[in-house]
Amino acid sequence: MESSEYSLLVSLALIPVVIGLQIWVRNRRRRRRNEAGQQEFDSLAATLLSALIEGVAVISSLLLIIWIMGGILRYLFPMIFNAK
Image 1 (cartoon, one colour):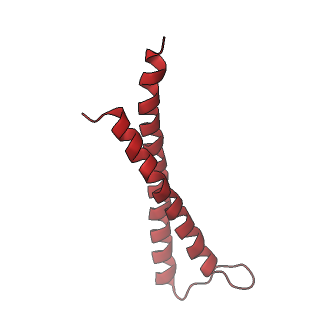
Image 2: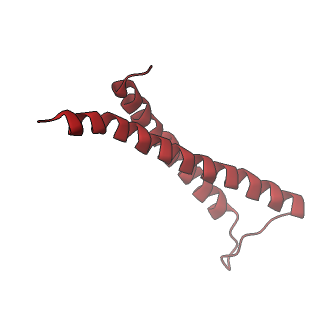
Image 3: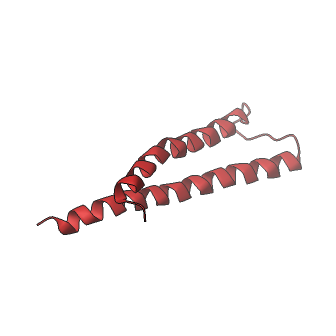
C-alpha cells in the first residue's frame, strides 16, 4: 500500500499538468476567435473534433483536481486525527 507522503508528492506534481491543460484549452479557444469575438471553424468535422478534444481535456483536468485533493487530504487527515 502506498504511503501518504507518496500520494502528496504525486498530487503536488500533477498541479502543473492541470494548469497546463487549462491554459492549452484557453489558448486554443482564443486562436479561433474572429474580430467579432465569435469562434470560427472550417467545417462541422473540425467543430466536433475540437469540442471533443477540448471536452476531454477539461474533464480530465477536473478529474485530476479531484485526485489531487484526495491525495492532499489523505496526507492531512492522519496528521489531524493523531495530533493530541
